[in-house]
Length: 387
Image (tube, rainbow, N blue to C red; front, side):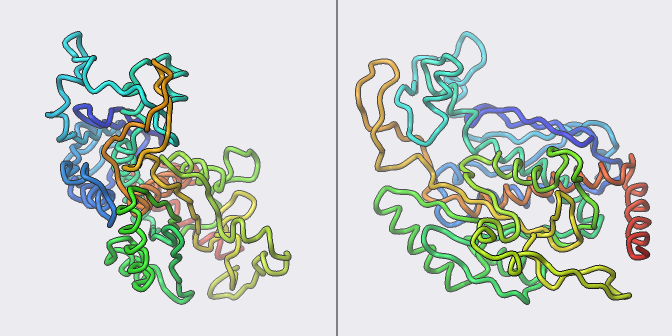
């Protein structure tokens, strides 16, 4: 079973993750992971924290000579801003607990609910872990999954579909490489250049008004074989696992697969994908309303998932709140924040989708080494062509 655990605070010394169950022999390098970490930090509309941090991963175990060994992998990302917070965030009795105290919960954050749940009078003890800074660790972890998928011939492409009221147009005939190139050449990971320009104007207006913007990103997975996931239990359904992973990203409030909510407004004749067969292709579809998943099982078509990100709740024009100690009304406190982080969330989305697909690949095909699982995937592909 492939699993991971992350630890660390936004202004702590490091973010750490431990990965268990990765096969041996997988080629991986710190520079490859760092490319994805840099993508997470980019994007028009990001805030001041991105000017401080330049995320770099270190492998502390489980990788030797550029290959995984099969033992647990420890990844670490240092927080450069720790130098400015070491006295306040220290773990010992020397910590300056009376400095930078937060008692004014921000609407839309975990601040108030978390402080009540964990009986904290300083909201910093909540917001440090609730921060989206934690997603840097998940991007590093998910990149290991991405590398495994690449070895299996699976390509993950993410892009921004909407920011605010502006939605990108996507051509049906764009192939994976073309879509990936167009998105990666955009400051907003948006493959539609005209929509990107309009999105940037909306972000500029929100910044001027002290406001923030959310949006929608979309992830496509090409080359996914038939048979990942299962119909037999709710928690083994591939769509259930992908939706849960995406909803676990900070600020995500909705997930769609395939047509998603659009399907609710259409008759079945316009929703379901007719099945065809040819000796060269085997079973195939001419449409993909199901988003590559039927009955919780991948059906061989590209996986298509979409996630909606709410506007970042930290505003430079603060909303009203109430001090948890004095109970007096105040404008909510302001922590350093972005105006729009949808492109960053898209990169995190790619990572968590990659991880879940890698996990179900290992569950389906098993194996302790890369060579073993590749051989099993090859035999499966031959088998399903003979059905």
